[in-house]
Image 1 (cartoon, rainbow, N blue to C red):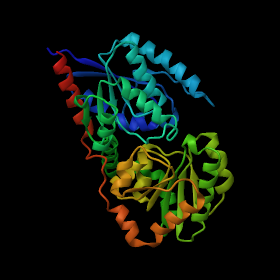
Image 2: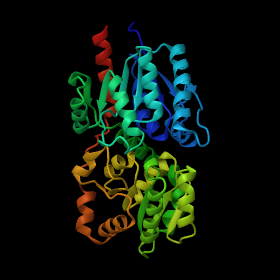
Image 3: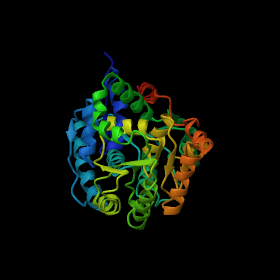
Image 4: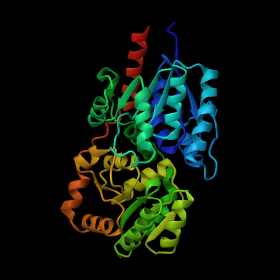
Length: 379
């Protein structure tokens, strides 16, 4: 009988959970692997929503989130607790995703124990270590230690090659977020009640152009968020527009948005959405206005233009393909770009119909097969 290889999958945030649950499902379905799931709960409530819909019960839940936690405190707590899990489980390999503190520390703890690290969504680079901060450096640190680099696009693979990563260790797989989006879209089609929580807003804004907004980036705290809030206020002043804004729980975000936008007729400031409801927001909106990374990948899969409120992006493929556009955080620029898409049908269709470069929905299976090839070559 072939020995099952134990893969410790370490993650802690909602985006990581979304992008890893298709891989965990594929590992569970493959008799060559025994996945063990460890969550840090770097995001608590938002993480739990994804775990529930995906049917994942973690083997280890470190529950490390604390109010106003510093990056220093989070990193040190992660290193101790994730290390203890590894010393208990003795995994054959450790898998991390993306660029969070949990992912970086998971890779570091594995490196300290000489356990191979497999990096899902490897190679994204903005070229600026402070944007996104601290994620750009987290991802580079993981890249320095990873055994296998699962790059979502050729652009990401080329970034790793420029950093002298062995090309034989780099594999272009597509992004697992598209796998997840296809899965949840099918679930919603089977059971529309999964997204019934947006029904009242859909009815309220039935005759308006809907702008979906997300904003939470640390580098935008302060003036950046103030400018974003003012832009949303000006956009919502149009009679033909409605804004649906799931507000991030971070108090640095909430206090700014509530002060500027609470009570406006055309603005719905709502609690963070679970994964099915967020997918529904992507489906019903006309435009997404965001500083998120994942939205830059998800919205184009549903034909929705994305305006990115950042100066740089580690996902340039979307900009190059025409599905996304960098607009920064200056109020006037954001408003101008939104109005252009609302009023210029050709400009809108050019973005809405552009090719999505981020995946075909089969990335998780590719990753598992590449892992199987790797363990076969080790045997």
